[in-house]
Length: 416
Image 1: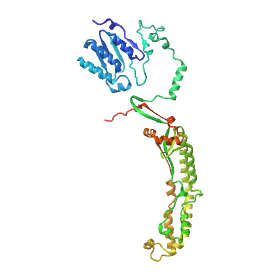
Image 2 (image 1 turned 45 degrees about the vertical axis):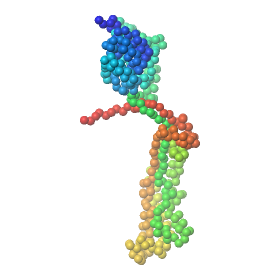
Image 3 (image 1 turned 90 degrees about the horizontal axis):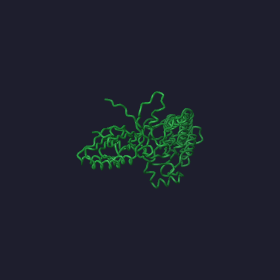
């Protein structure tokens, strides 16, 4: 004979039901308990196990979803699964499992409660919201009748349903535009290090043409008659002068300006940039790259002319000494007694090869930019923190460490 409660409509809770209310229901059971849901907290499972031992073994039935993701979402505890399993085994009964359950039904002596499990990873239950209940309709509403669903939702006065207004809709839509929903997998938590700064490797490579020295064959340098002349010759072997239009100094100064404006130096560790400066810094770096490209286009002919001029000056300074003492390595191709023209052409060839072409220098100019993240170990290192403090960086204000959900990426369909 079924219990009279079995003929009653179910009580549907529209809010999360707190554990103390579930425990109160379990404690008043006198005949039977049936539970179907994704899981239970350890506290509720403990009381359910105790009641199972008090009632006859066949009086209690449990169906849960034993997927570990259920526990990660906060729908249940692993301890509860183990406790219910052991209790059922001791009573020679079983706990059934069905995957994908996301709604709870608790039947106490035939009286049914339907409610959503509390995703404790996201939020906690509140005693007030558990009193929001959908009551059964006694008669179906007539068309145009004022009696409807909103009349069936029972709630405390402070939670009474209110009409949705246009300003509220606008507020919600605007808020979602500013912070759109992201696909997070709440079942997968990761430890997140959020910093407001990054390490930066920022350099302008091979643009300082005035600082380049030409690698002239050593036997030609050794032809200088005295230290003063040798030093003069070495000075002449500078690729271009510092004040020359194609020296690259303008580019180097521009790089230094960007560096000083946006980057801070942590001694012994490198340069860092605050995230707030990142957009402006990237824009300045892109502008520098554009300047480098323009320099490549406009400086080619001028640099070639400068190289040819400087090479000719060195040839004239060395020609007399080379004629007096021809390098031995030339003998194989010029013979024992080369003419003056042969010596001059060979000297020019050697020096032009040493100086190289304008394209070789210009094509190698490169803006290098590499960002590197800060590690947890570094932030906890006393030496690093001390250096950061000297650099006027307050680490406690520009980083935090916390648990967060991993972003969910839709998997592509498998290919057979």
